[in-house]
Amino acid sequence: MLEFITKAGFPSIALLLGGIMVIVAIVKNIALEKVKIQLTGRQPSQLAAVGALFIIGGIALQYFPPGDSVATPTDVEVYSTLYALQTQVAKPAGGTEQASFNPTSSIPSPEVSPTNSFGISTPTLFPFTLTPDSASQSLGELYCTNFYSIRVRKGPSEEYPVQSVIENPNNLSNPDCLLFDFRMPDNSWIRIAPGQENSKYAQHEGGWVVSDQFRPLDFEKLHVYIPDNVMSGLYCVASRYGVKIRTCPRESCREVGYLTLQDCVFMDGRSSDSLWVRISSDKNDDKYAAYAGNWVSTYYLAPFEFTAGYQPYFRYYFELLPVLEQIPTPSG
Image (cartoon, rainbow, N blue to C red; front, side, top):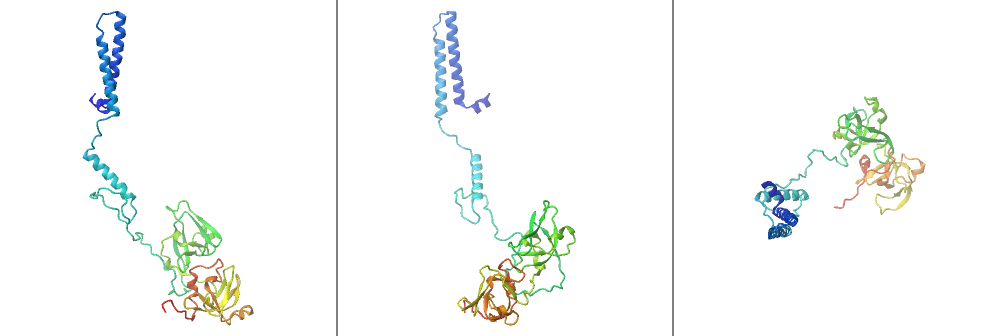
């Protein structure tokens, strides 16, 4: 009974008792009239009056409580802890706190480590010190899929058409592992080697894939891919707008002609910054003989084997040409 009163609250109990008293008073009044008992009739009236007082008091307490209850220390502590946790989560990493709460709280601030916990090293974009690898060296490193679906392309760029697709819904538990033989100078693309041990991978042989779709990430084991004719200096125009031919390796130099899209020309040297190459004087046919000794920008060129447009890693290949012109650096 005490538990019921505690849960219901005094205002509700007062309203209930008042209602009962009023009902009892009405019933007694009706009964007295029927039996014609000559009583003073004050008992029902008094009972009704007391019941009315209970009802009025209950309503007053219900809508005009004497004051809010004070939370116990335990409640305050729990609320402060939850509030502190919420503000800690909402706080940006490394930033200042936006919400104010008890500065003496014992909840530690989250620690954000700026270092890579996976130990993945970023490959050097332009490994200029590399030398071409010999094709006679042993080839074939095993790498396993890191994604459920991987597109294999006919060249090391998104511009090349899709050759095939490696599909594996169970990649996490049972990845596909293929042999690879070459990589791009910046490790962005790797090539699937011919002669796969598993015949189901034969359709992917010779195709290129984005390297971060495979693991482990130690692609330095692979040889840098050297396209055909790069060592002899054969490059082709990869821009649909063509490229201007100038008398020296600078934009301010005089224009003497231009090459159009897919024109392929032998180059015999480069500028020291590798932004310009010089047209060879003894390897080109008569069509380009008049331009021998003049210069073109490497930004619009691609190795003979790559036709999908300029890529940043092409600079590595231009580095294989001898330096014929020193370009002053901004510092002097």
